[in-house]
Length: 299
Image 1 (cartoon, rainbow, N blue to C red):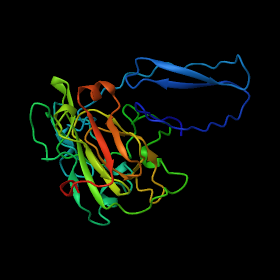
Image 2 (cartoon, rainbow, N blue to C red; image 1 turned 180 degrees about the vertical axis):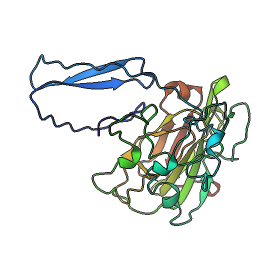
Image 3 (cartoon, one colour; image 1 turned 30 degrees about the vertical axis):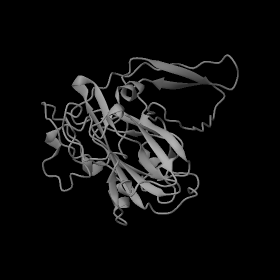
Image 4 (cartoon, rainbow, N blue to C red; image 1 turned 90 degrees about the vertical axis):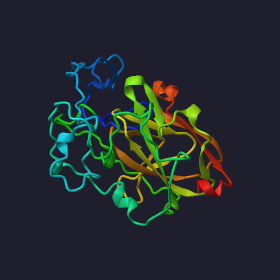
């Protein structure tokens, strides 16, 4: 690949194989293109390479934020592609026929029905002071390039490209599914899961030690959220069969619905949060508790 967009707290191992005796610049450009960091790969100390100019600033459209009604007409499956919202005059269109959606989320989840529960007792969440301008029909976006990279003329890594080098040790199908909504009121800078900030929830999200489960995350906000789970791997369901990529942080795009398989193999309380720390501090934080026994109502 030529470029990838890495969210806060994500990690990648990259193999680079230079073919010439010269220096190369590694360019790390901020998402808003306001600045950069550069590194140098070289065969000898002291060599340098040219640093490219920053690219023009990318502007988020209502479609980028899953809030464009204009994409809704003529769609057969809005759960796949269409994400309605507020059309504020931005008529940017996306040709979905040219997108490679892959066998993700719903295809995998349709294999065998499993019990589904909300991560928050008393769900589903409703509109309120902490939930506003909600993306009502989120869909699959794992195949999409990162923000600002849709039109570049080189190869950009996307989540559906990722494959594990070998299968995960636990290949059991999930026994249950937990659904979690990413929520916000951006005008009042309130961030939460399932419409509740951390100090409003009554307890942790319960996992039973040794169980295999599916976590489905639905981003009802207009922003990307790098969601980080401590203590356990999340196997992102990209359609890669038994080679699902293992991640501790998954970037969830605006209006996106995705799922990950989790083996609850580490007892104890674990932090689960958005890794934009100003979102976490404002309330987008929960605790996952892995216990030998969990209450029947939670199952």
